[in-house]
Length: 150
Image (cartoon, rainbow, N blue to C red; front, top):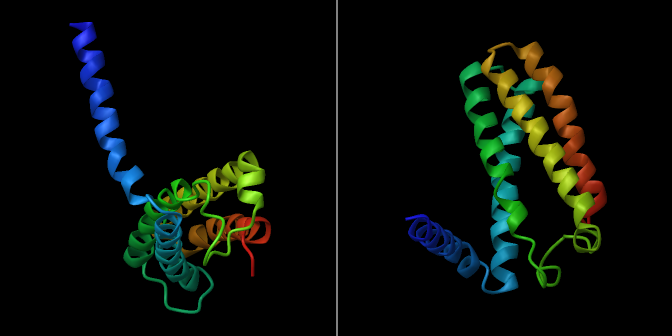
């Protein structure tokens, strides 16, 4: 029974991984995917930021919804940096592949800060949102400064 379970688990893992592998069959596919996910994350994080900075009226429901979407999107693009996707129409710096551990640490930090923004947004308190937004914006800027060409 254990062998059967192990086999089924391994087969399921392979089958679930195939769509992701096929998705990035070419480096250009990975670049398109990560650009799209970064764009969506930025759009939703920007909506939250506009409320946190007073550029648009605060709407607790919209802040929470957009923060949640930003958190979800923040998890998608990190797999879209396979070898070979450093060339072509990309602003990704070579440091992503040269210092993958530093890149992962920056990604993890950004995701953790976005989770805090989401939690603050759910409180329905603009001051809590403002407090959480600053460090999240700094985490995003850190990645841009270290890993993105301008």
